[in-house]
Image (cartoon, rainbow, N blue to C red; front, side, top):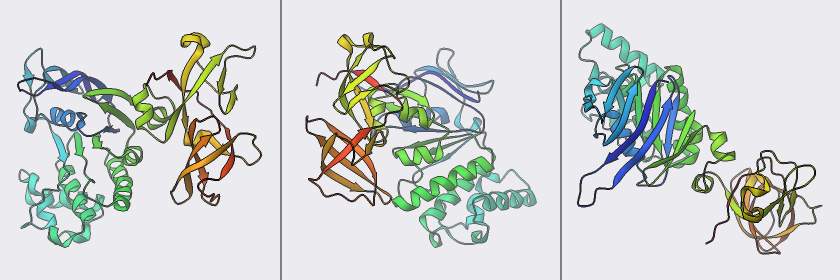
Length: 359
């Protein structure tokens, strides 16, 4: 692995020293893009800063390849400028009095003029701004300014690029487009990168590996598919994607375990736990919006309580006659009224269950 963190903890001094990051471990292969996501204050930016060398380790070790960047037990802390790590921040931090070309070349003073000009041209071509080389930052859109900041960070050829919510100041539509562009640029330059965001769609669009954090802990480090379909804990299941927890009971049957729910029995879903996984088989079943299919022929009926239009689809919030609430992802040409009863059926490929929530 290229970037490796082993039991990394960061503690800020104070009257009551509380760890901002607690025993985080993960590895990121060379050329891959990792993403850290979680609620505000969960420690994702702190983790980025300690990798950059801007914060000190309280415990653990950080390495890139065979080189140790920081090792708390051994008292090793490589200075930020010696780590060959680039950073892109929320605020673009461009020099307003310098042209785009001079902004990008700012960190290349050690190169001869011709070599510097060639490198600036290469990264501006990479980010699609070669025609804007002589323009001032204020003459560019927010998205273009962010791409200049990215070009400046890439110009010195960092072995790792860290990005701290780089699109948070942009509107939603532009963020989605730039997230796709960012992945294309990083892959084209074979750059290993770690990206911090609070936006799930950004994380899914950019990341090869995604880490979900909460209260300083890295709860799961996995690809997007596994986070969505095989969440490691209840918080990850709630934080990622649309879904609800429905009471269920797992019972033994001749053909294998059966999951009994208010929507009917689930008999052919993969990875079903055994009945003895929970007391009396009682558990909470995670039902994603795409696990519930609108089917007028189904005997199971549900009342529409809320609806959210998302272009090609609606997300319906539904209430069963028994009182349980579920979500359903329905094509938007099925435009039913709030209060209407519709037929639904479960179509669950992955059985994800957790201990019954006492609350």
